[in-house]
Length: 433
Image (cartoon, rainbow, N blue to C red; front, side, top):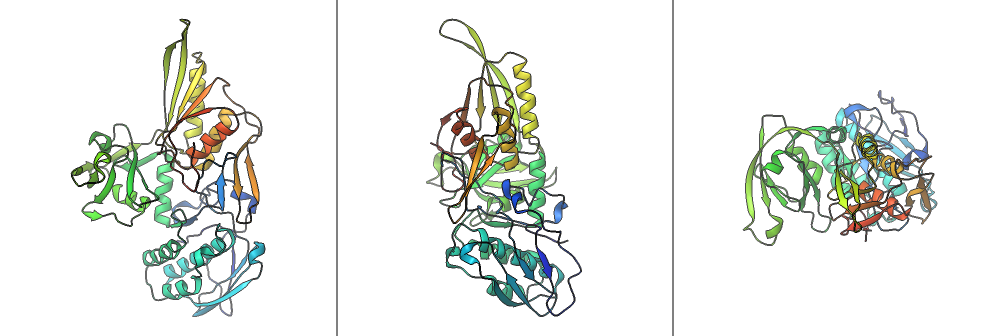
């Protein structure tokens, strides 16, 4: 099992035999144009990945932000299965043009040795692309590599790397282990076994809050609502736990159950609203699209039809399901649309870009990326063909995050839609007005 961050590294030994497992061949730097430039490749469940803001991602209005996999690092890393290895890191950034050579001990435990590879790649990605060129005044490659040396399990090694990344002071720069990546793929495929909760960490407090519940799921039937705070899972406090780790604790085999302690959003300042519920785990079908036609009578007495489309997540099927829903409503002579992105926590960025092309024509700019040097690069549509040009309103709120913010910003900034609602989640530093 060999995890990797982004497969464009050529690892060579220094004064010893080469590692038996080879990394894939380099791929073009241009592959950073969507969130799964590294993840969305056929590497099955044995991948790990570094999720980090690639400098700053935002629409033209500079109102929205998201988290993305950083662009692919260019460089040559020396690595070997020996007691000590020299690593030479070369970066494209003008500020970091000089190569840096670091010596460190390499673990003889195979799975820890593999994680050490990942550490080198993570450090290289951050050194080249992290928005803060001082890395929050951190320089932890050698120290962390030494600390990994005596470890005997991959889990302990990944925990060490997670702690290393946390010193950057950015909650959206984190590492995904192979197990977490597999869970991510299950969720994006639209099928999982769990309780039907969509959760995220509130960026200011770190508390885990409910973004939404899946209709008809055990969580929805138990009366858990958007804005409720998760406190414990099976008696274990969630302090300091990220949303993915908490989600893994909620998932499990159908037929089992999990005890969840929640605090009602109406009583967040006290313990009076705290309750514990036991939720059975079931098959959860994450259908990202629900739609209906709303009849509306205008002021002059005419009866019109408004198409309402609720998008709950940006899964692999979201764009295709959106097309099908719009074609069906167009066949029924709908004259205006409402796209509801409220409490949509995001998902696959590529799905968001594909959905934008369902509503927009031509080669409009969907989002701009800005690197640490202030260089802006647009991501444009490729020959977009709108299914409909009827009036469009997009609903957003504080639960609209990540790809939701990019889609809403793209439709608004290109004059295609009016935004209605509240400030969005603000995955990075900007929120929708």
